[in-house]
Image 1 (cartoon, rainbow, N blue to C red):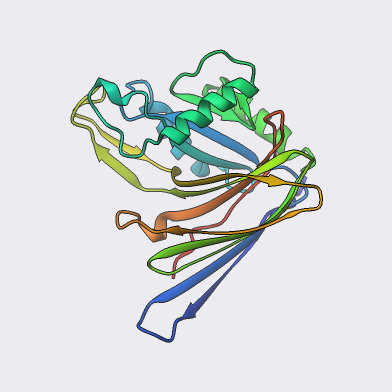
Image 2: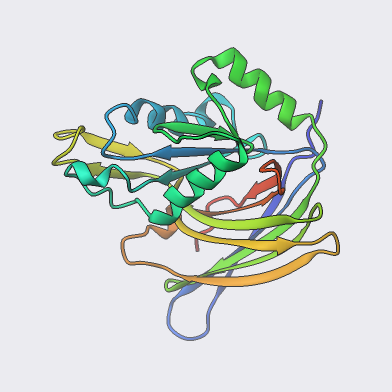
Length: 254
């Protein structure tokens, strides 16, 4: 089957003042669903690095962003043991608990993989994961998303037009690849950890109606972020936790 693959285009334009280059990229979702994979992880968790590595390897194994969009949300509840994860955010911990509630689970854990809104234990099996992703990709999308991003050296702007089921919501994220940390304490003390798809900015939820949502938001780019390694993600989630559709821009740098 030929997927209705996400289409993207990039445009570069020089600004008239100074030598700053602005970049603009856009993407439109297709007719079939793209799987959203949420990884809940922590640098303070000794069992997390192998799963982090697996998530980083997805694209190399053919799981490109027209099939699977991974996002890594670092939780903060491991910080108490002595190593503060610089990527962790209480909002990601709250997201994990909210997902567990929607999935009718009474607990959370790390590393945890959530595939299209459901707790997922099958990522250790290549064949099972392939089959499950293929099933999602062959299903009809229940939302439509058009995402345009633009940025200069100081600010990342996101413009989105989305349609989805009644009572669904939209989330936006900026994720960064190519990150690493020298861990000095906690369960991973003495290790150098590598991370990809790390959520750097998290926006939402925004209510989506069947009549559609038009939204524009801006995020200040922090000095430690590498613009060339950033990309934007948008997804629509239904009231029962199911992911209707997801899109991700390519790296969009000037």
